[in-house]
Length: 327
Image (tube, rainbow, N blue to C red; front, side, top):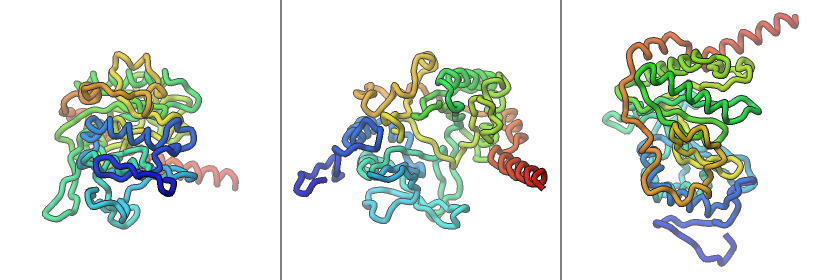
């Protein structure tokens, strides 16, 4: 903000530099982001409430970065939850975005993307997180390089067919990037079973037409097919419905009905183009009620190797084989 320029505030949050470009290629200013977050808050906050949150921030002249730990300078009204990181061997203070004021504070920090976990933590007698309630399964559909959006849409319809075959329903939204997210609200699933069920649903989707869909984690093995990513489960995070993305035009992850899916593309939904928003929450209208996942699906998934682990071992095996050939 230029020296002497009048300060602006909304809902008790002091705002700065609102007329700066949000990032290179954004086609939007920081003010556009704040306007969007303020308008979408009634729809976006339910998907963030009480969930550990990671945000992607973009500072002027810097590369985007993901922030998980709440900075010390955050105001007192921003709540947080402690989560132990085995990888980092430390406790991370994940922020919780439970109200409009917190959402706008993050916007003023140039937080563009909002990635909550797929489960809500449960606590013991202290503040220690003991576990969590898994609320959604998600299949993240990632198109191959250079493909059109139509191939992702085709695989989304395969996901829907795979869900229908086991008595489940899902809702779909654009990822805000190049792909789609199919979300399945669930109940009575612990984290290992939720992860297993996701693997089973991905495998069933692939089996419907392995010529266009694949669960191969290694890019070299995908062969120009849409990747059906089953690795986002429970404590994993995902750009939530209505989250902006650090993408050209500042696209947003936006709900789409199954009937409209063939007629849209990700660039249709940006922080500017979706305003004014509809009166009723379009995501809530599309999401089915939480469902029970059959034991058959869970059992199948427990027999499928975890994609990241299998890929790690396969990568090491290929490296050893390559070294042996070189010798």
